Image (cartoon, rainbow, N blue to C red; front, side, top):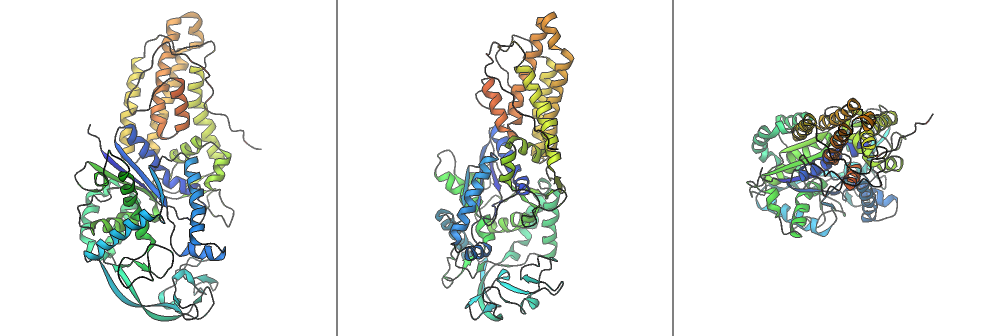
Length: 534
């Protein structure tokens, strides 16, 4: 089969606060896909980065008497530790304040302007005369007309009401508390409405490769009719606008961040000799583009990014596969740092092994509906499935008492057929974005291996029929070797250990055998039991 050019984009987390397990649940599908396609032999680029611009970061910087770059860098460093801890295999994890990214985004923005898809508009906006600046919704404070409590202008934290433009006029500047006024402002807009027909046609063509929530959310916007969107902000922190007369404004982060998938690809391919960025982003290159994110980011990838690509008028391959997760809750409640609900992704790593967390979040992930994480469920997954099934098969085969090497044996043909079938069926499920079912399929092979082991009773055969013993241990060793390929997409640490034990050079997505006579040395249990607290 011809190699495919696979681009996988993981949503760019906003560098303003720590990430929790729900964020990992929404993003880990990208790593599974990257590992899978590499095992298949495809050309893969897996990219993401920290979204470092915008109002919330500048607000936090003021409160903490730091620069926006210091705030963004602090969380970017934390994100890197977290993604490394969860073994995300990014080819490039970048930051939106990097000069390479900013320069390329400005070039793409200018092309949109030159092609007639960005235009100027004069409109009244909230203004603080004392601070001498235009205000975003987040920089306005008012009494919520719904519940009567004080709130910022973007959304009431108490009742979730989103103030209308008329209600915002009654607000005050959050910084100096002065009454706001309206003042005409010069703004650039993206003519999103011009892309309605093209995005409708593309969506119809590829929507069956999307999760249902992505289909529904995108069709909702298309049915309403796409509205032009402002692309400039009155900020001092962000990407400059490469248009004369806009020196005092910055680019909206939703343009800046989604174009990061493209700028990261450009940066990577400049450093490599085996690919060009066009291989992944231009039509006719046997390419596929995955976007992996939570359901709150759907329209930015299914509509906004595709519009920005269409506006280049350079035969771009549009986003064709959207992997949009639902939400993960904690003990049936939304994650909330302020309310002490849940744990951060790094806190979970301090308590548990990343392989087990990865397995649980994928095997029980929020693919089609919101799901719930509890410590009890996680510990049951680890002890019941990972340890008692997978770990047990490896342990009792490779650490069989007195066994010093892989015996000369005959592979059971039925088991070989099951292994080969597992590759095929798991592959089909992954490409249909059915990750939970794909993991069940691999675990079924584990269960079949344990059943085969129990039925053959090698502890008895060792004394009574050495040929049966050798065949059983050899066959189970072959199962384990192939599990180190199949489970590489989920539990890479454990699979690397197995490959070291069995002298397997590298993982591949195909049936493999191992040599009889292979010395079994320093075999340790893959997993330890989590002792439940009273």
